[in-house]
Length: 336
Image 1 (spheres, rainbow, N blue to C red):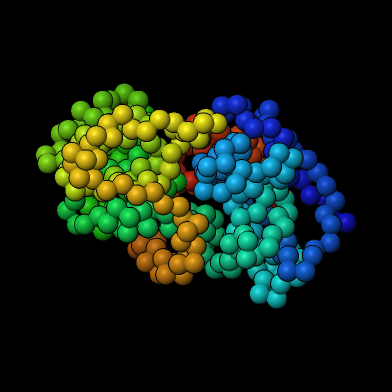
Image 2 (cartoon, rainbow, N blue to C red; image 1 turned 90 degrees about the vertical axis):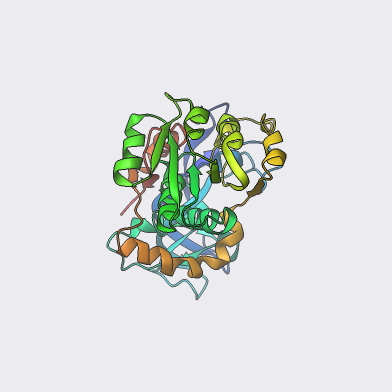
């Protein structure tokens, strides 16, 4: 029998007190059922959307996790046991599993997919070839429908998805404005990602800076919602488009936040606002990869990997991601 350590959701978190809500547990792994696959987890992905899964809210894009269940999240690792011939032992896979040393999944329900194990750094399956990159590509290219020469604004621009949305916009010919917290992140945006303007929302007036753009900004890739959305809406160009990818400003609330205070601008400026979730696009992954791989190979798409080692330190990494302490993609190395 193999012992498996995993994180269990015991309570709904209050704010960002995750230590009081999750506990590290151990179990003896049971035999696999027909159709199941077991993954020896190499890395865990820390993603803001999972914060809502911990809450009791039932109006999200998927039901909340029941208390007492294993915490769910995106995993990358090798198949260690299998009862599905499509996923042989030793195959490198990525999918939605558990915060655990060994994730047990049903492939059709977990979005499990075989990924290329020949990459120099397989962690890029959580990075520039991962779902954050897919989200950036869909949001910028399809939902916001950015055109060459247009102004694109990205919030949480130094995060995993935001940093890649900036680069996708740049690669598609847009002029990019990144909003991030603190001078270090703003330097990262301008010096390493090549954005045209970086706005430090902690120390600058976002609305005033955006007002410097003559004619307004054409597209907004929104990871945050809340006050930042209110700062952007009055500075949009007529017929602008807003792609709503995340609402991190609302994730630590058990009740929905009120709508934008400047919602009148949607009418006044004839704006289109559309929310999207990458799980709706998982079936198109093979379509996204050639372009992303081309950009990676030509060094036009990159992401900083903020890695924490040890399953027991998962909550440290999770806090780094949600509190904005990290630049880029936050991951946990569980085992080699």
